[in-house]
Image 1 (cartoon, rainbow, N blue to C red):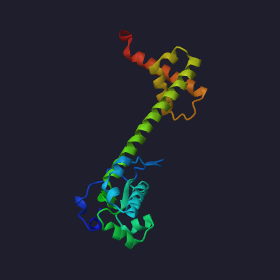
Image 2 (tube, rainbow, N blue to C red; image 1 turned 60 degrees about the vertical axis):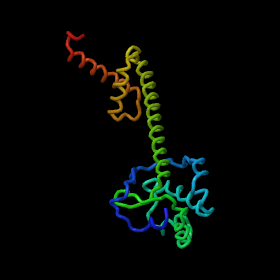
Image 3 (cartoon, one colour; image 1 turned 90 degrees about the vertical axis):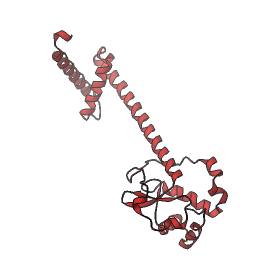
Image 4 (tube, rainbow, N blue to C red; image 1 turned 90 degrees about the horizontal axis):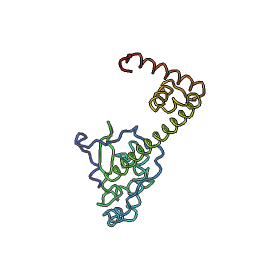
Length: 210
């Protein structure tokens, strides 16, 4: 990116940023840096030491912006975020390999901001990892919850504890009841609710289907 990119452009011609302001990466405290790509990049090979340092700072700064991975389209704000003199930053951005190299404008809702294609890929990868971890954690928590429920039910009704469908149904029932702490009383209620449910199913099917 050069200073020319900071000139007015048609907003309708700008790409839409794929993440919204509310798409926070909670606990996002590191970035997956593609070091080999960086070591052989034009920015590293042709940019000055200072420009490279500020370029990397902007990538890090963008991780705490909203939406994540973007920067304000305001050279004065960027100078404050970088803690450098505004005139000095403008001069560096006039070069082909300044701190804003390859940063470009995009639409973030009603706002125009800056994004970098490589930074966006890093952010989307982080979002994907977060979703994968969330799914794994939810699956692990569900497995533990079902195992505990099966153990509790076995204390009341050993044969019923072997019924996977019953265990899943009771788990859903307890969740629907808003049961935060599954005490023995709640387990008894769940067993009774399952019995009523099973009886109703049996009655609806009729003797011909039994």
